[in-house]
Image (cartoon, rainbow, N blue to C red; front, side, top):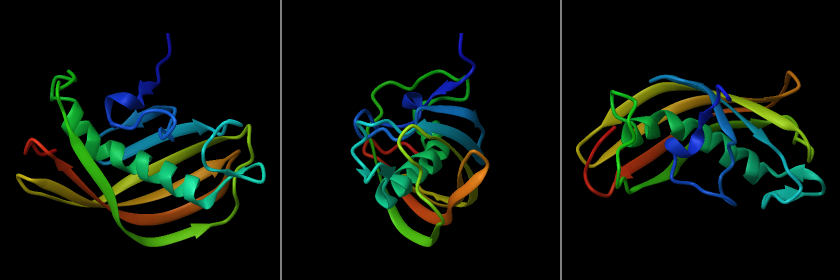
Length: 154
């Protein structure tokens, strides 16, 4: 049995838009994920994951920290009927050093830097690093906006 955590417990994304395979570790302020770049990925250009795909992967990794509060209760039980919407509200910094090739496995670590929660929405700032075989592919900081259409908060 795998010790990886199913990302689909924390995000509403599903294939082909799901850009994270599994969560390695997660808590209220940190998450580590991995993603296999397959030949049928929507965001491929010239045999590499595009910049857009790399940013979407980082955003999904980052949003899983907040998604945990919407989809999973304090007893680690799934909350049924969750209907959230999320957006990248700002990319504060972004450096792309290189793009991963098809067949690569990328590992991403995100850290929650700040969070503001109201009854209607959550806003947060997260930093991230994306690596492949120990090489830094991308790093940055983004703001995310997440809203539960039913009014619950993370």
